[in-house]
Length: 327
Image 1 (cartoon, one colour):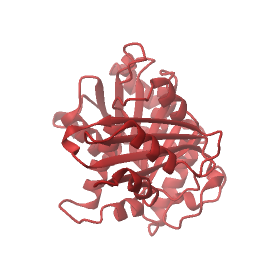
Image 2: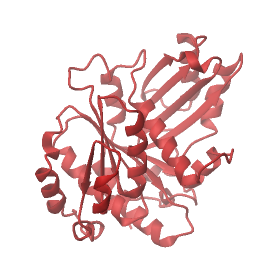
Image 3: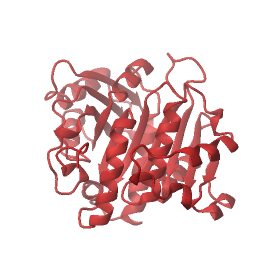
C-alpha cells in the first residue's frame, strides 16, 4: 500500500458487518488484489456456502442481541467465534477498515464489538465507514444513535455517510437500487483510500486518519481544460454528511486524473479544498495518473477528527443530535 512502511504493512483487511457491509466486501472481493483480505460477518449461517469473500464468520443472533443496550458491550461470544476460526492471525500492522449500515441492530452491534477486539490486535488506526438511515424511521434512527455513541470514541476515524446525501449524489437514475449504488460507491471509495498515491506517505495517511472523531467525505469530479479549478468547487458542493468541518484537525485529499494532471494541478486543488481549515490542520494529499481517465479528474477529501459537538444539525442525519455522547 505505502512504500515507506515495512511488510506486511501493505495488507488491508476489509470487514463487512451485517447485510449492508456484506454487499460492500463482496464487491471489493471481485476485484481485490492479494494484499486485500475481505471478511464478512453476519447472523445468517446459510451464507457460508456461497458468499464471495475470503472469510465469512456467522455469529449466533443470541450473541449479537442486546449488545447496544450494554454500557461496555459484552464481546465474549464474538471473541470466542473469531478465536476458534483463527481470526487472530490478523497482523498488528494490518490496516483495518470496517463498514456497516447503522440502523439495524445486527451490523451496528457487530461493528461495535469488532472494533474493541481489533483495537487489541493492530496498532494502526482502525477506520469505520457507515451509512446513516433516512430520518423518517425513528426506530432506525434510535439504533443509529446508539451505534454512534459507541463507535465515535472506539474508532480512530468514523466516516459517516448520510443516505439522503448519497441519494443526491446519484442524480442519474441508471440501473440498480439506491442501496446497490451506495454499496458500489463505498466499495470504490475504499479502493481509492487504500491505493498508493504519489506525494502521500503511510506516516501522513495514518496520522490524519488517526485523529479520533468523525470524518466527513467530500467527493467530486470534473473534466475539460479548467477541470482542476472546478474540481474543488464540485467537492465542496457534495459533502456526504452535513458536519461543520471548518475546525477539523486533519484532512486527507486524494486526486486522480488523466495524463494531463500535474503536481501543480493537484496542489491547487488541495489549496482550494482546504482554504477554510485552520493553519494547524494536518493536511496530507496525494495524486495519481490514470491513463484511462483522459481529461477527467476525480477527488475525495476526508476531514477528520471532528468532535460530536461540531455537527451542524442536519435534519437528515443522526448527527443532528447536538452531542452524541449524551442522551
